[in-house]
Length: 332
Image (cartoon, rainbow, N blue to C red; front, side, top):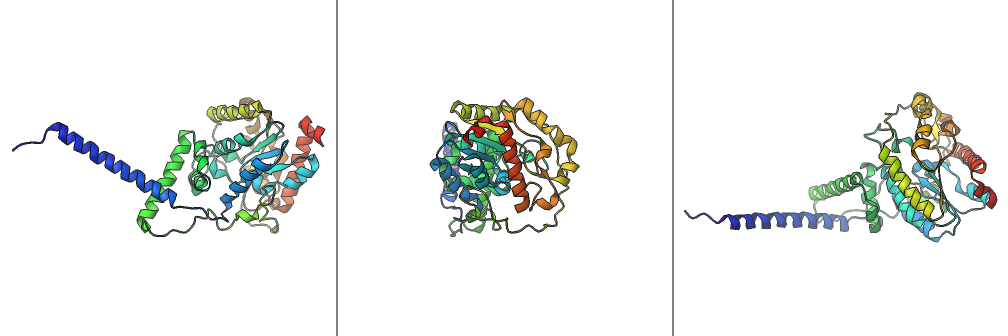
């Protein structure tokens, strides 16, 4: 019996391997290119916020964060108080604050003032799986955002972000193979409860303002506290340095928070800002308790205020900025 030469077998194996890889890549490309996000999806508000960053004249006050800013700030009042255009870029936290900072960075200009604020889950709270500085595969935000704007793929620069993106793509491929690869698929809506059209012209989410009744939720939630990773500081400082090199000022403030959540986690939260001040190379303003509100002023989570809480939170932000940022005082 004549055996095929080793070189021939090796060549066949290599060819088959390359073929499988090419098929796999082609399938993923097909799924990605034939998927879409609904026009009214909550995440699609990114397109409007991006346009605001492109078209609003500087100097501006730019709010960079997650849904803490989306739900809990009245940007019109901020704008009228300081005589500055305000762009609220907040959407939600599953993107990760690192990803969101890299998305906003290219648009900042000379004279802009960036106010950074995020829920604690980006830095110390690992309750849902892990700290969300790099995001989470919940809602597959980075993958959906790439469907909306393919250029956002360039902002996936860290291996943790890449893992989340690839996991979302593989989940999408698996779903399509299960339901029929060539079956027509509807657009993707990240949440049916919230809509892109419920953001105002400043980028504030206002769909919740009519509802001020107590939601009846237990907001006394225990956080799974982890030490702040030194890499988080390093990466944040690098981004802020690039912003300040353009003539942009950057400040961090604590997020709005339900009182019962604060009480449950008080020791850890009281240590949060001292750690941030030690690790961050730009100004950290205020204190945690400045932004702690009674539970009846919160909406649907420990971070989202209702209409009354939003008014008070905005007033506290105005007071803090007026006391600490001379450039804003000069522009009033």
